[in-house]
Length: 129
Image 1 (tube, one colour):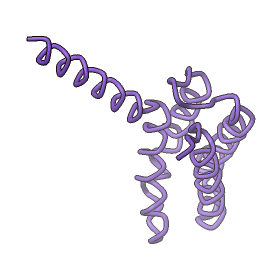
Image 2 (image 1 turned 180 degrees about the horizontal axis):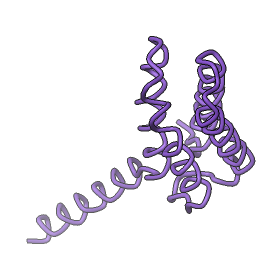
Image 3 (image 1 turned 30 degrees about the vertical axis):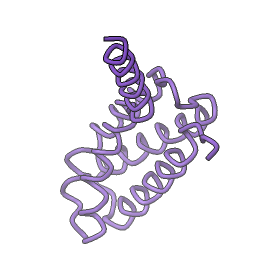
Image 4 (image 1 turned 45 degrees about the vertical axis):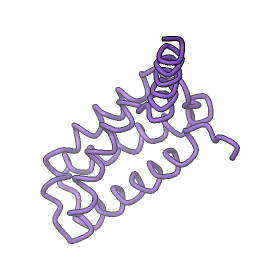
């Protein structure tokens, strides 16, 4: 009986540890979804997705800036970059609303994409291996 109890406790601790390591930042993931679904079509010259979803991108960036980082993420390390991401997303949205050229929209979307990936790379706390 003690062996079973010990195995159960060990199993629960292992599951808890795995869950903590795979915990997601909801707002990061939601922004990433919009970025992915708009940037990749733009790489092929299809700007319809970003033109119809630029405000949604601003909304997701706003939510991310306002969110609390889950355990395991270092929001302090990216605060300034997140604010810049929101500023750039708003600028992209303004270009879309102003019917800017496809090149201007593509260039701004690329800049927002690159900034997003810089943030993504440095926001998660690095664990030593």
